[in-house]
Picture (spheres, one colour):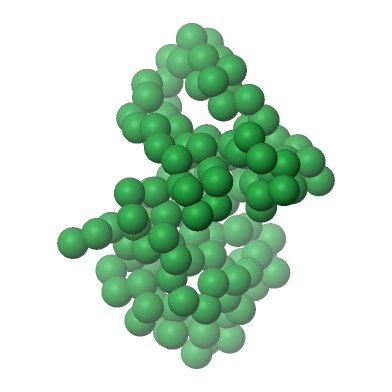
Length: 134
């Protein structure tokens, strides 16, 4: 049902400082940077030993990312998996009793279609489904 593992999403307060730390201390390489205007989220994707880390931050405290940072602090936010036919995957998961945080896919970085599953149905792990643009 799920495709290959895509990335680990990580919340960070200071995106430039986190990028510098991961690159200089751990040897990560910047893959891409971007901004998701709908959620006012700044994103940098790093390659760290063949695994992608998606660092997420927001300069605005009243955004979802801003609130999460204030309430929970920095750390792992989600695991992401690639899927084909995201709407069909969501319907299939729903039919198996999995609660969806996103009933319909929404826009992610580079106009990817993304949706999140409720962590209470996935052993406490927030799972993102991501479908690349054709």
